[in-house]
Length: 484
Image (cartoon, rainbow, N blue to C red; front, side, top):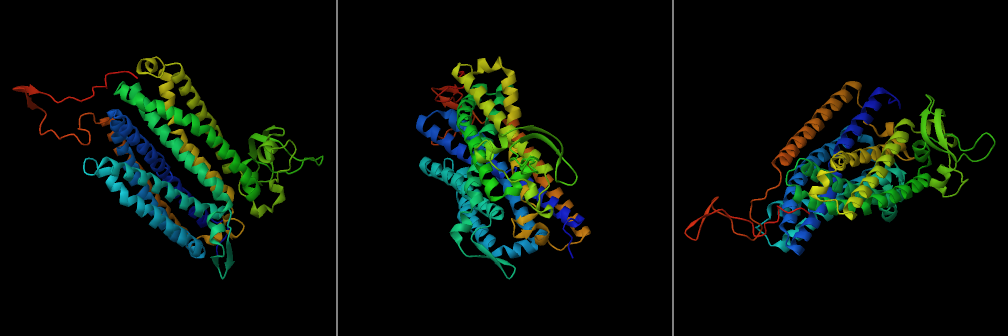
């Protein structure tokens, strides 16, 4: 018999948390960068400026390494469902099986069909067809994320199903697919992938400028990235607020844990409207040992009124409450990063408006470049902490209010759990190390500035005869020496 808080259950949860956390390192960047590659290719075809092409081919290499790591860790996660959560996989099969099948057929296979053309089709297919292939890779990767968020959103708000004979049987596919959690969850996650993609490219560009390597080329990338982030970061803040309001309605225990909101009412009977900036939950998970609170802010955030009632954890049985520590602090880390990234977009935009986002101007502002390099890692942490908030906040349910996590866990002993924990740990770290090895090689080598553009003839050697003498081939548009 499984005990809800036993060590094997804890290891199973930690193991799956490790697997999903490592997988989510790769897939968001694949989505974000694929759309940016499409934009770079459009810019090159419309302007004829070969710098867009050189940037496209350079960041395409980062995309390829990232895509490979995402596939490897994704296969591992599919295995983990059956191995670690067999009863859950069986129970949700009538819904999950179809959704993951849709993801495989309409997204993953769709993406796989075009990614070969995108990566290997340069100079082999027409420019229009290549652009079409890049668009389809980007679209398919977003479609894949949509189906995954459908499945995960359904675990938060399981609509359109009935639990009958131990199986979640679908009664309304429309309600199940367009579940309440996913309506805000997918846009929030998709914009996060774009922010990640732009910050990784902006951070990489800032590093090259800081090292004075191809600085004029990477300033070309930095400008549109900053302007795109100026649009995306406030949109993400708004989406996050809207998602929080939705969570308050559909998953009140999650919201209460995110906010460390233990008591619905104050001792005098008035609504508890204070927002906890910092809190230290007690061991019983029913009050704070210490907190710094701001009156009325929680009510403003969740009800958009000064004195609205926000249900606290005291409205729910102790056995149905999530632990507060992880969702409370991971949520605050995510929010703090979101506002910091918005600040970075504002800082960069100010430099653009002042005409200082040039090679010469940036060399006088190394701290902006260093901060931008550092900022490239922050969206990863924001996505991580956002995911932890979503998943830990749902506990102790694997399907909210319908199946408890321990009920969906495979019946394995402690020894088996340890073996799988170590095995998955070694595999994920190997993928991570391999990916960073190839990332470092791509960065160290830098962009290729010598190969002919698509449609230009290949040179048989480093030199060619010209006018009876020897002349080295040159670019038709020698623009790399200029500052922009």
